[in-house]
Length: 207
Picture (cartoon, rainbow, N blue to C red):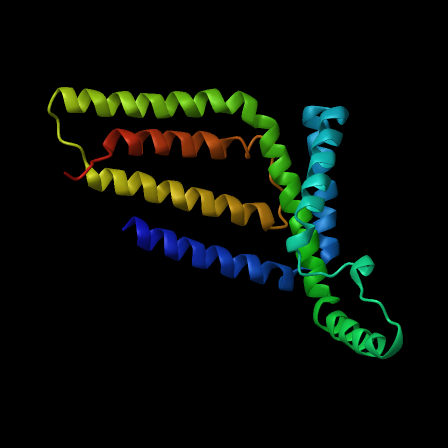
């Protein structure tokens, strides 16, 4: 069950992530980024909002090597006979990658990085809660073992599947150009922490 849910969730996630850039121009993602930056500045303050924006830009630069859009500085040399071949290859690259779709992919990644940076701003406060939920689940499992109570593999599969779906929905939410309220993002670690704790409490190791 868990494997089927994971595969289905990943297929839906990949399909939507590839579809969204084709449905929206890059300007739409940048407008959404500006709107959410204003919300973050109103909620966190200007200094914290700028720190999150700077973190997002640094993450964007760190992931630039996996972005399919070639940079101008990486263009091959165009001298001599080899230069003619290189120039033709550069033209092919521009036709393939220098278009609205891949520019939308780049803008989408920037928006997703900003939302991830916003979520990271919450993590110092949320980590304690998540760890407490996991410890509580582990203790519940130990109590069941001491009292010779049966673990519930069906409930473990249910909680694990819900956790996988929640994570995939979060990634989808990161790339959609719709406004996410500042208080919505911290709900993700809270929900995942609770589900993980419950899954640990119901975990059944086959002998």
